[in-house]
Image (cartoon, rainbow, N blue to C red; front, side, top):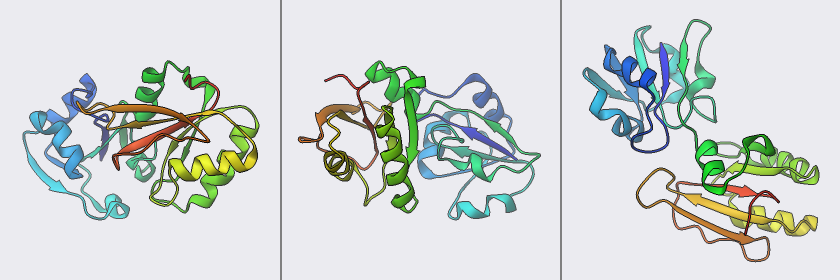
Length: 197
């Protein structure tokens, strides 16, 4: 099986990804991932409903993963003999939009998980002075991050980056006292001193 990152928006497929998608015998993915790669798909397409069962797909399967498969994506399901082809991730685009060196950032995800682990990692990272990139959860987003930082007495800028890679992309920067307002469910958060107001 091959797990291929299709990037976070239109036009972000790598040449390696395009070549492997064009040669695929069968492609699997979410509606969004399939849409991002549609012009290069020349075979049968199946939508994935249960990602935990990816290991049951045929050996010749090409599985599309939005962003990069190894940033809170489908790469975690890759077996020893599977091939993972990277894609452009939301953290790469967020750092580019905000002019932040990726080595200054700690990546945390609460997406699809119990946020308590993300909360602990966030506390540790900001206490050590790192800027945090966070993939939020429905119940742990920008307002909860701002409240947590405020309770910790840490006053740093907070940015939300919505619809990255799409024509309606939006970046808004605020503070822990006045966090930016989220208008889309497809967003990420950057919080820390590397975020410039």
